[in-house]
Length: 171
Image (cartoon, rainbow, N blue to C red; front, side, top):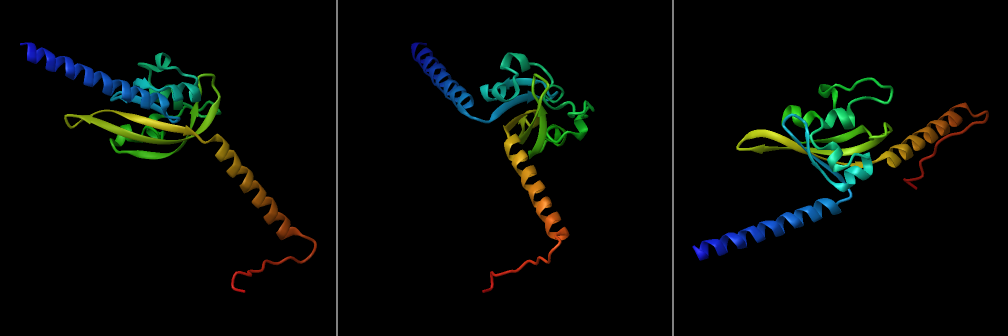
């Protein structure tokens, strides 16, 4: 009985150490990470989620992830789950990735790049994990570059003097 008790104590310590390491990793990552159950209700989130969204772990716990982070467009139009890129992993039970627009707790919007991964327990869909990063600055920089290229193209096409493109790569 003493040996079994000793093994159980060691097992509990090892499990506790592993849980602490997992918590340290989750808390240290700069990406927001949100876990959700099969109904889409948040089961956990890390500190980066609060930094990006304003929703703390206790705020999100048990709430519908889609409704609270991605449920409408900036003009107020509801975004239905079947039209939601981040919900695809829940619907298809397949991993997915892409870009989307999320809403902060204060109502402001920001661009994200996300990865969604479902998980299964005994072969049955049990929920998923969504990780995402804020790409608002990158999206704005790309939009500025696109505008600049369009302006340059407009100037080139409408210049009062003759302009032409020359390819000197073969010289």
